[in-house]
Length: 332
Ligand code: UFG
Image (cartoon, rainbow, N blue to C red; front, side, top):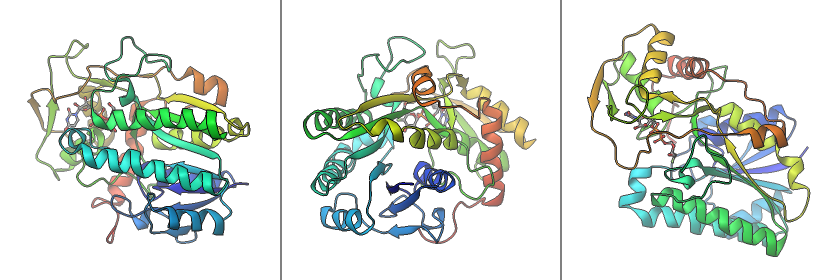
């Protein structure tokens, strides 16, 4: 049993991870400033602190009071387009605040860290599927700030004995199987929730961003991975962090790409509803195809992908949506 501080534990991936930690017998403690997180996404019997990860006084206090042994960090801004127009926000929140968090950890002798990184650190990959050893060349400040943290972690592992794992997520999707928590971003930009909204009529239509890519049906290929599968990898890595200075990088994706059109068809199959579609221009900065080789996580962590089919992932998203069509209730 470990006492784990989950920074961003009221957000989409963080809140699912909190529940997986409980299921695995650990004690999660949540820190979230509720800028994007939802208080209702965290059960009321979990210790919750409304604080900022970049506030070293608050973080140090929590680390000590709760006898924290390991920190997981999910609290980043993640709008790729906004990162291009407002890079200050991204360097500040995703890099500078993370540095403050790491400093508070080191000052208090907490030396195990699990970091949410992204496939956006690879930019436009030179080959597919993406293996961890490919060059990382992000094409936007979002991906760059995540890569900057990865590099900072490497140096801290070497110099200070920090042990860490950085998980490079592909497209996180789906919701808890019981439909109790799920994806609720404001604004929403992710494909699956938008297609569901177009199916139910909450949105007029879904725009397909680009139909002339060099892919089988002309639309972009992405690797949609279930949020609970992602979460389980974060716990499976714990024993790898026992060795001081351990530095691990893992891709997390299913390795099975789906096109935008396939996602629309899968939502229609799951919901039984027709999705109105408008074909639109390409979105700036979208690589044609991104999908993972995640054999490293599978081999080294025994990571098992439960949701190998995108339709099963969409079923969980649909269940959450039907139970909570307006998302989480109450203010953030
Ligand atoms: N798409 C549409 N219409 C929409 C929304 C999306 O056609 O209304 C397309 C996109 O062009 C893309 C695919 O659907 O081809 C998936 O788009 P998302 O916005 O859902 O996800 P991304 O692949 O752009 O982004 C994800 C993560 C980011 C991360 C990025 C790495 O959400 O945090 O992968 O490339 F940075």
